[in-house]
Image (cartoon, rainbow, N blue to C red; front, side, top):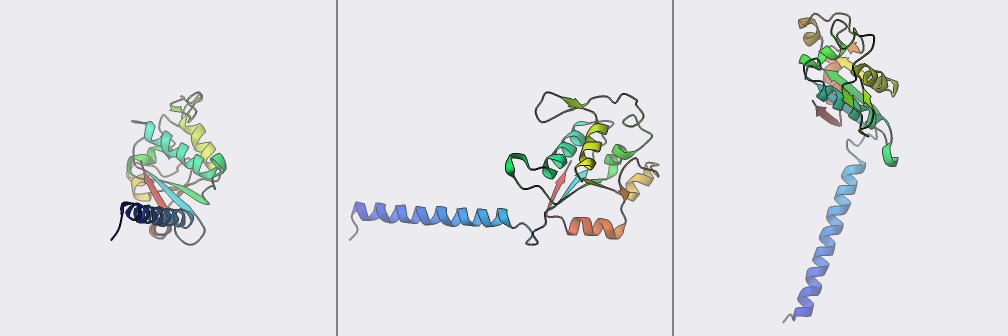
Length: 171
């Protein structure tokens, strides 16, 4: 028959084994997301930044952060901003985002002190190695044939972009 000490000892051992099991599973999941050792992140922007700049600001700042190594974290190997539906306005040369000589600071940076324009964040994102892929149907339906940045995707490149993505973030 079990006395209270034996029951407590058994409960403590089970709790310890459970914690160790969950911890090792979490560590393994964090270390290997796709198993290929290459971190591909797609950030999909569908919100029109001329109507609401916040999603584009956040998407670009997260993309830049992923390409850096904050706090010693490993940076992503590849980050692609996929602009779709209204998000293609970010790369439309004919809208108010790109035709200003003094770009309007609409984005607050993560430290909350400085502000940045969408143009500045777009330049920063690409300067850190970020890529931009454009939905061709979305762009042409909005009259965008000569985007300011990025490459027009096609069926194969868009298929592979999402098929090979370890993570997709949507704004």
